[in-house]
Length: 305
Image (cartoon, rainbow, N blue to C red; front, side):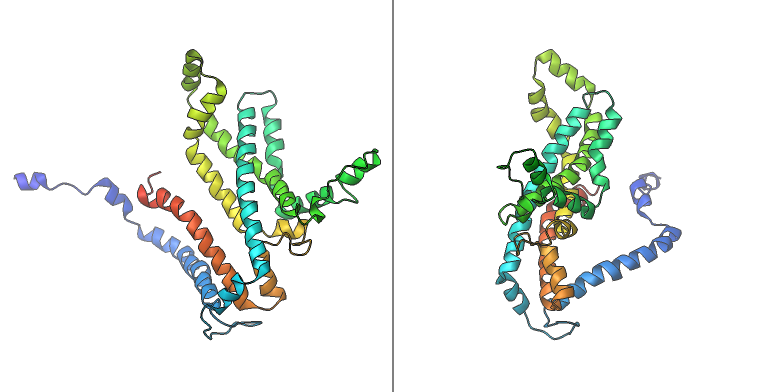
């Protein structure tokens, strides 16, 4: 009798893991597309990086010779340096500016919807449009510099887009203007979810607001900040159209980035092997950067977050 009562029923969690046949059939086309289009294309790209393919793909084997050419290419090294500078400044700038805008709106200012729309509006524009707008602003003969010169300030200089030493920072500035609104929206949602009692307790204890933000609010916003960083990091990895629209990779190769290096060698220079080796290195780099977040998000806690 006791053995019958001891036979525990199947846990509800295990029951939920069973995938109904109808759902499995409905998901089958999507699963097939993911496996064939995404995973298959990635494996095909990695395979081509070990070939001598030029205009058309070949299936010979040249080992790591394409990678040796890649790391000895000054153009690729410049692109790696540029993407590192861009990535650090872009993510940091968007986080700081987006947080400040979110804090400003969270003060229950009047016309909050207007400010929220203004701050978020740049994100609705594509990188191409953003690049063209900022290319005009930085243009020394048509943009801000020319306008200030007409006012009599001939010493004023604002020609970053044609300056080899400053063009990367011009691209960073344009990208921050475009992406900070996304961070503002994410962090504002987080701020609105914080219990008001925390602020009441801080006021009773005499804690200044800046200390409250640094010691309490920012740690509570940790998951939102991680989400914003991941979204911004994907923008860094696929940075291409903003560079093409603003500087075309110039002056010279001063604003070259890995994605443009890949596209140029794939479609203009007819060097598929070198292009796919650069693409493979980009894939490995992104995987290394995202691995800690993927582990914490989906593996360590069993995807319960």
